[in-house]
Length: 468
Image 1 (cartoon, rainbow, N blue to C red):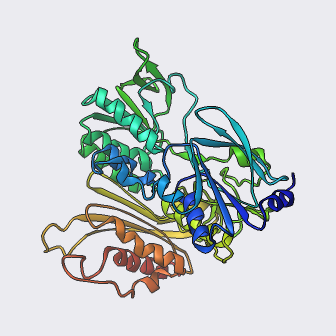
Image 2: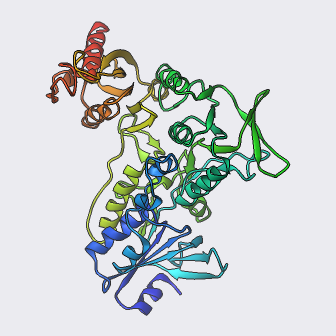
Image 3: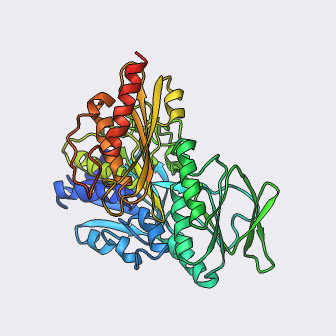
């Protein structure tokens, strides 16, 4: 049956099929439903897990005990989606796309039963999958990723059996440092094994060094420049140690924080266009390139970096929710576009706040930009005001033009969200000279007279002027 035949069999009502039930997928479904009622648009959504519309970014804080209950991370339950006439099918995994005939094959995870579902419009929101190296012992009990709520629950179950033991976190990116904090909060002795020069590879090494020092000060053992080669298993079949180089690091639990890759196996098998990072390529409306009725969003796509002009894979819930809104508007008969990103992200480990936006030094070099850097140390409040805490701000600006290229901030309370000033400036294409006159809010409890970001901008502007 062709796409037109399938639609004729349903009458004039179109069918939207959504693959993936988290941020991008269900935002798209919900927005499309707001614009078109059930008499105009049938919506079928497939989700292979047990949950929908939840905050994966909140999992480390749930595991660490800051968020007391799992359900607090769920923005909208399956029952709430179904009450809005969305045919949501949990524990159902899409295994094949038939783009020519406009249909998807889905398998019931529990029973194994398979069936085909036709569509007029398709949304691919398959997310990303944790990087899990094919190493000996990697699949042993006690080794955990933290991508889904099911993953978080499995880790908590292990934590209940091994409380107060030794935890090894593999990787020191956002997930790695957040999970190191979570395991410290759970009472573990924590070692972080990182193959990079410093933790937080999204920062330049000189800023990552500040994170390293703070983590050591919190009682975390940091092992940098170490490649994991094996996970050792005990007589009980559970993980007992992580091997990196010539050293063994005992472990009652291992948490993988190596990063994620776009989950695009379905798209690749169907011949859809993928970028350098393995993510789906779309136009500004998030329609998959070369496809009339297929959209994609969330962690499975690549997006335009507005600073470098190149495609990037940026798996963040903020983007996924925006993608869903834009796709839903377009599917529902409206019009919306996604312009791109500047690469803003914040994180924390214990009381240390870590933020970045724009390009690192190596990013700027890779795209052939000439730049100057400045680093300033300041405080979150006026120096005389109680509890003023130190922060370090690093800024990159383009030689000759003075265009802001990137900002990194490491500090204590009040440091992280200051990166939003730089994010707005980057999006607007401002120069560091223009930034120096920004009318930011000031009072001693909130900042010095010159905000730390503006101090960095002044220093960068002077340096640019000095280079001619």
